[in-house]
Amino acid sequence: MKRFIILGLKIFGILAAVFVVILLGAALIFNSSSVQKKVLDNSTEMLAERLQTKVKIDSVSINLLTFDANLFGVDIEDQEHRKMLQVECLSVNLDVWGFFKGQVDITSAKLDGVKARLYKPKDGEANYQFVLDAFKSDKPKKAKKEEEGKEKKKLALNVSNAEVSRIDVVFNEDTFALGNLSYVKRWSGSEEGFIRQLRGKIDYVTKKGPQTARLDVGEIAVLGKDDRREVKIDGLHFIIDNHLPRKNADKPKRGFFDAGHLDIHANMELMVNHLGKDTANISMTKFVAVDTITGFNVKTLKFRAGINKQAAYLREITLQQENTVLNFDSATIVLPSKKEGRKFAFQTSRMTGTTILKDISRPFAPVLKNFTMPLELSLLFSGTDTTLVFKDVEVHSQDQRLTIHADGGITHLNVPQDLAVRFHVKDMLAKGDIKEEIISMFAGKKLMMKQLKNLGDLRYTGDFAILWKREEFQGNVGTAAGSLNFNFAIDENDKYITGSANTGRIHLGKVLEMKDVGDVALNANFKIDIHKERTAQMRKKYGGKMPIGNVNAVVREASYKGVKIKNLNVAIKSNGGQIEGDINQENKGLDWACDFSISDIDKMSTLKVKPKVKVKMKEIIDFSKLNPFKKKKK
Image (cartoon, rainbow, N blue to C red; front, side, top):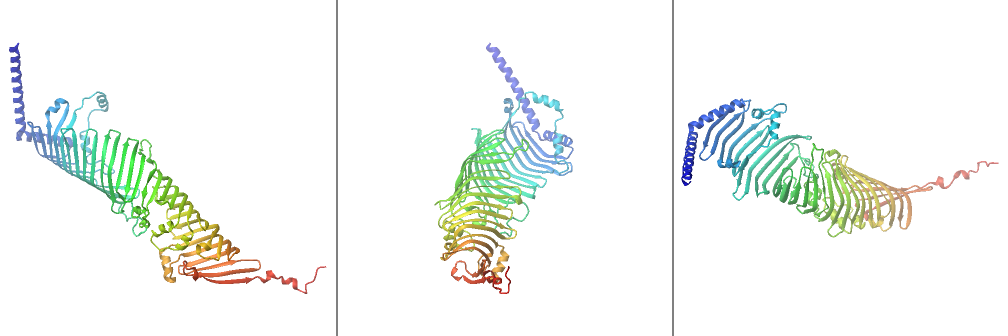
């Protein structure tokens, strides 16, 4: 028995030796430059014939002992004889023993120096379409379906080390470039991937015209093991240019934000906790971004998200921008799909936080650049791609001297001319000097501040709307001196403020510090000029810094030195340097009137009054009754 075992081992040893000799012989033959050149020439000729274009490969190197394959100087033209694809070097190293395990093990792969020039005209085929057609399967669809129905054993691909460098791709007028991509899989199972110096430029056309988008990324790092990945993106630079003047050009009062002009620098870190075919679970641990043009600055953005094909579900969201911090527990984002008829929409849980309006001054409202009062807010936020809705909005100062409760929304986000911001203020209370403090944060001449202070606490209920070149305000203001209903609009085309106001009772003397004047009930209409050039000319001509415009009112009832007067007609006109007015009352037998003028609204002592009286004698004495020649009726 032992003899047969020894004989068997000898025979197996001899066969193994023969196999190794044959394998070494084949390797030596194929490793020779002459054989490889012949194989290269034949392969190049076959490829050129298949593609029906010029194909050039400088050299090939195959080592069957180490299972290395190297390809140098690949050059393929398109059918218009233009350089379509150039590759300087392609190297692959295989672990042959992986084939016996049903997998392809690539121990290392390298691709270096790739240039691709691809074109796709609007009314023709792409210059690379012939390559796709050449390698298209010749099997009929029926045979394909039969094969798809059969269970196939696929070879698994396992890459241990890969590097791609110096990639330059042009597609029509769009360009893409990659400095370096590297991937390493450690023996422990952990993986590391890096993308460095990624650049791209895309030209595209929107409803508003042509635009250009540029993207530069310093480094993208992907580190992890199994199903978890840590992703870091550093040096991201994103630019959009619509090749038009910025919307705030020559408009200093308009914010810098313009969706057609963005210049964003960002860094971010996130954890990919799960990544499936149609699902993902990620955690944004760091996001910092600034638009260098608008000044919009995101200091922190953190959240957890579960994503599927229909929606994204966010949890534990924190957003910080300079001095503004917003927090909310959850948000749902419906992902759009034309195929399934699904439109974009979102909804959040109650958002809470603190804001300083100065944070949004440069991008959206330069008038708020000095607004440094911290405000605490709370609201429910939802919307679509065309509408934003704000519900149960609560805003108050930290000392509760200012409190606001409101609802509102923004509609027609996709049509600038129809865009409308509308809010209903359910209640606003401004206590003490808070109103003066708020006004002091705005630039410009502060008019009638004494009168504002004399009003005391303010309570407002009403509505306002910001429309295309028009703002509208209406409501009721309650003060310590009485209440006032108002309705006015700011026309950005004609540059006028027009409106009306009425009150059933307001202590005008208290407001104007005129002790002889008591309660007043009136209806008034007004028109104030806010045109910069027109008002500048008026002020240059007449001097002064008072409002320019006119007021017409009917005083239903007024009290002066304890005497009540009714039905007064008042007409006031101001040229900026002086306010002139006329007050008159028509009676049955006596008309009285007065003219007044004032050059400083804060100094009522400069008020000049000229009284006028007109006696209607005909209505007092009927002279026809005194005619002695008039015959008496019998």
